[in-house]
Image 1 (cartoon, rainbow, N blue to C red):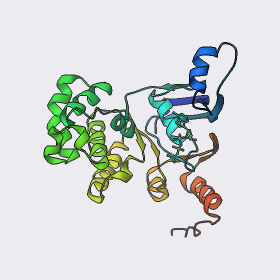
Image 2 (tube, rainbow, N blue to C red; image 1 turned 180 degrees about the vertical axis):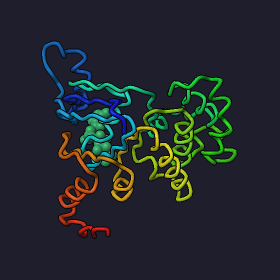
Image 3 (tube, rainbow, N blue to C red; image 1 turned 45 degrees about the vertical axis):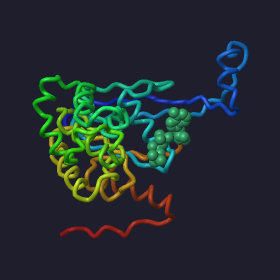
Amino acid sequence: MSSELVISCSHIGKAYQLYIHRNDQLKQALFGRWKQFYRQHWVLKDVSFKVHQGERVGIIGRNGAGKTTLLQIICGITRPTVGSVSVSGRVAPILALGSGFDLELTGRENALIGGAILGVKRSVIEARLSDVAAFADIGDFFYQPLKMYSTGMAARLAFAVCAYADADILIVDEALSVGDRAFQAKCDAFIQEFAKKGTILVVSHDMKMLSHLCDRVIWIDDGAVRDLGAPDDVIDDYLQEIEGRSRPAKVASA
Ligand SMILES: Nc1ncnc2c1ncn2[C@@H]1O[C@H](COP(=O)(O)OP(=O)(O)OP(=O)(O)O)[C@@H](O)[C@H]1O
């Protein structure tokens, strides 16, 4: 790990506007100057942490804790309501890229656009299209509109585009869980290779994978950092809380 800071989150908070009644959004638009028709729903509250170049950082937490929202802020998909985030380097957000695909365009066309969104030159993406298609391994579907894809096929394409985007920071949000075993193995191999030089931020409920891959784990609980530290320590505490049990004690190696 180098000492170069690549991600810095400082006192991030994110609130969504919750409208309780059907017409409240319209009322807000018409009469919002005089009265507020929504309530603030704080999804993230005062989250701060730093990631250095080459680190592999896992993010864990219960459903709805705010993990995806945090990744979306780091990727620039949504803005924090308060606080600041700075990111240096090219970010490849695997799941977010896939969710932005155009269903009417083919896999090939989406790969071209996706690469451009990630900041890769058109000529470079074009030269890599056959590699992207081979990595995605979806056969002739590569030339079919996305609306014909299964969820897993779209995730394969998104992963393949990110794999050939010369990213500095890979953002993985449970993207791996939708692929079949063979594809998961391919992604694992890619991530292991990427981890030798790049920075990885991964959200997952797969504690075994996080324990093997990560240098540090952040536990997000109710929109705040509950714990941050060595993977096994944080994971143990998390599992103990959600399952009311601890993992077997580790046997010291000789
Ligand atoms: N666009 C939105 N508008 C309103 N609320 C939202 C929006 N996006 C997310 N939320 C809310 O923010 C909270 C956190 O969601 P988020 O997807 O970040 O959780 P998560 O920790 O990734 O959960 P999971 O493990 O289930 O994927 C949830 O209560 C969710 O309903």
